[in-house]
Length: 264
Ligand SMILES: [Zn+2]
Ligand SMILES: [Zn+2]
Image (cartoon, rainbow, N blue to C red; front, side, top):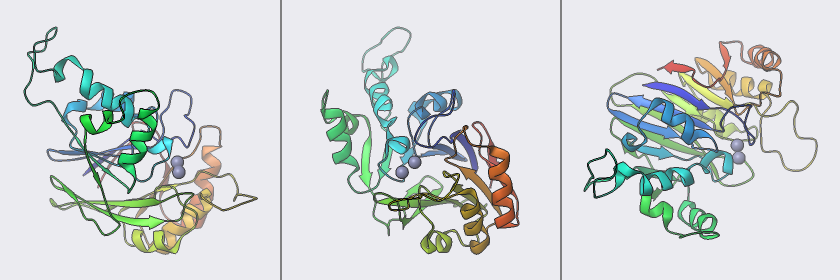
């Protein structure tokens, strides 16, 4: 199983960057974990978007799902998706219709947003949309997914991916404040992709994110093999973040960068 980082920005993009988006490839099976703003353009650098099997969404914050909207327009209006020849494309009776595995409320949220200016069923026309439950274990070709609710500002799921062809277990922690559930879910993972959004814990209100040191604490408590920090702005000192997480974890840490590839 191969993981390619398409986007690692937090709620606002890095210069030239994209929000949450991670491409998973395993043999002939291809899936995206999250598709935040900016990710669709990055996906197009690596993959034909009509040949993606599924998009798995951790939660319905813009930086994790918003590019489902331009992706919908592509699937509906792109010349090669039409039933008749257009330009150099021959026309197709079987336009691509990737699967979206989203948390509860995905359909309704997309309808509300897109319906504010256009046809509210746009995304449903473009994608096969399924809403998962925490106990769901959907399979996409050789890829198998599991979910774990984590505490954030709204309903959010950490996502684990494994391959039926063997190889390791990837755990993506999504957005979360410190959480024993995340530690349990990540236990023994080969790679924990953990958010490290904050330069310091939130000073007021409900907590919703992690610092790099807290990401490291989770990695140590879960006994993972390696930690990759993500959801971290280019406006934070990456070396500082790395050292904070390394000190807390005591194992190998990297800060995610776009285009980085990890084999599991
Ligand atoms: Zn986020
Ligand atoms: Zn979020």
